[in-house]
Amino acid sequence: MAADNRRAPYSGPTRKLIISIDVGTTFTATSFCLLQPGNVPKFEEILRWPKQATPDAKVPSVLYYDKHGTARAFGAETDDEDTIMEAEENGWTRVEWWKLLLRPAHLPIIKDLVLPPLPHNVTVDKIFADHLRYIKDQAYISSTYGSGGDIWDVLSQTMYVILTTPNGWEGSQQNRMRQAAINAGLVDQDGGRRVRFVTEAEAAVLYAADSGSVEDWLVEDGHLILCDCGGGTVDITGYKINAVKPALKLEESSASRCYLAGAVFVTQAAKAFFRGELQTTLHRLVYREQNGTTKSVCNALLIISTEMLKKKFAEGDTACYVQVEGHKTIPNLGITRGRLKLTGAEMESFFQAPLKQIQEGLEIAFENGGRLADASFSHSKMKVILVGGLASSPYVFSKLVAWGKEFGISVSRPDGPTTKAVANGALAWHLDSSVGARIAKYHYGISIKVPFKPDNPEHSGRPTFTDLAGVKCISGGWSSIVKKAGDIPQLSLLSVNVKQNEKIEISKEFSSTFLVDMEANRTDFKYRTTVYAYRRLAPPPFLQFPGKQTLVPGYDVVCTVEGDLTNCYAATPYKTMNGVRFKEVEASTFLGETEITARLRWEEDGEDVYGPATIAYD
Image (cartoon, rainbow, N blue to C red):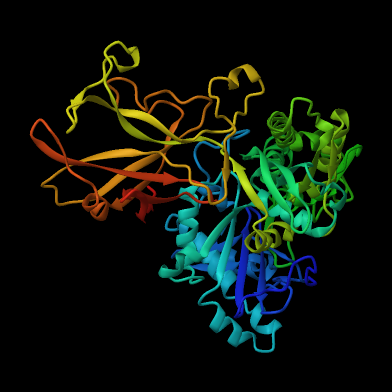
């Protein structure tokens, strides 16, 4: 890719290397940028992969494992006939769609998700690390630049690694991905903070802006909806354009949403069709390959048909034909000259569930984005940008364009290969910091003690205790850090929480104060507090029902924050209550970037002082 002349020359004193990796459910793309003082940044893609027939920016997110749990083939190698034969002869297991095993449990699923089983001695974390190690070991940079070997040896020690995630992935998934990058040798343990995360939707909207395909839509105060229809997930986020020149500045206008509704669900529906209605008649038929082995026609259909059908089928097609190797005309089975006929209605049924979910997600994004804009907002003011592999399907694209016309909404798909959209957009995200504010997807908060009030029915039946200050309290109260964006169309419901749609501005601290009572003779100053998410409309005042140990439905544990309060304790004056000397110390957690971060805060001589804290995930 040519240097982007809209960016200023890199002003840093030394060369730096940034690599972005977009590990998708079905394909992976990798880009990098070598920053050189005085030069305009240039984004480049890895286009040469082992056993790849023609240069391509994408490579399958597929691996083969032997019986001992060792990865034996990766990426394009897994499509190579010689590798497939070797895998069959040695009993290797093909591993695909494994990224979805990382998904958070709360993500909505449009139907029962059936994932290929993993080898008994291989975990998804190992697969992720093996896949990233395969990417790291490609010698593209070394072979592209005259001194590429030296560049990699020197700059890889300090390079930033940008990993993309679906909108619905959270801190737990990021933590596992960071550890996979460390295990793969992309960074060492001390360099873990140089692994950063950006959502696929945010990266894709920046790629679309860079591509020039939506130039006319980039107007100040304009609104965009980015819909990334990927292999496993569909990510939808609304953006308001705050500025175009001298640099693009965006902020979220609707909370990012993630659906398990990507291209693999089209594949799954097609496979279910083949296994169901067709298996009875086709499973008994076999064809002989050149090497003498045989395969059932049904199994062959499962392997070769679904990807071709997604790329080929278009709205208005009355039929689609699947090549069945080794057979001529069999009229009673609907096979003509080795081609099986599927009706247009049968083909459309494969796309039905994902399309329905995409349209519903877009409608929610419009409702929320419109409420954030102004009372006179209309759908025509928003534009939809489609990216991702499923969006390249002629049928899906035409149906979404038709849906947009029905509501007066413009729908566009950027020109050029969309496979590199997210990887290149991730580099733009790291360099440009174009998105200045995001909308909270959920309520985030912590559990605190609250003074007991006998006349409050919510307090009834809960155990009480007396704290060091002599106050009768109950535990488990909810204290909000950030309030989620309202995603229910009815405005009347949003009045429950007047601070809905809270914007998380970059570098702005959103904190929740919690007091820790410490007796004067205390020697252990480590303190832990748990951060929770509430994923429904309005959080109840307590995290648990009276007398119960389980969380109220809707609450989930996000992470645990731990810090050493020694310095904080030393700076805090004593208090005395009922003859007991104690100190009350204050700490806070805050959100703002694409990851949850935390720090301790206390006051010394009227000034805020901060100390480090660590984040831990189960």
